[in-house]
Image (cartoon, rainbow, N blue to C red; front, side):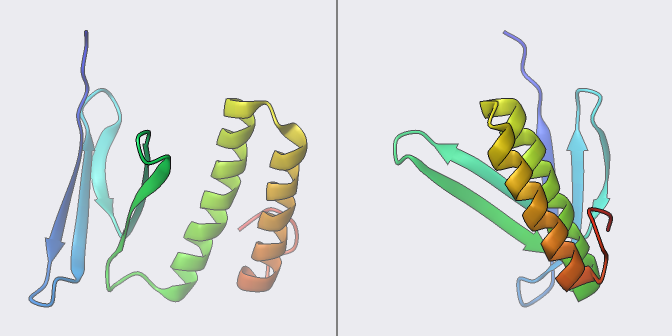
Length: 111
């Protein structure tokens, strides 16, 4: 069986606030530095989602709004691929458009 590692390295300040987030995906995913990460893991035994939500102190509120908007769109795409639920995915995209309009001042789906 083949394995592949995805690594996150979080540099913290004296108050345990992330200053830098580095990532690496060894199997062709690349590497880089990011201002934020949202990681969700499914706990099969507890039937619950485990989360790690981190962002650096340099991430602006406007960047965070755009980050969330793009995550909502990505979740809609993933949800549709995983479940075949096109109608619900479309509703999620409608919410993303609403979010963009009210949080980003953007009409439609663009951010």
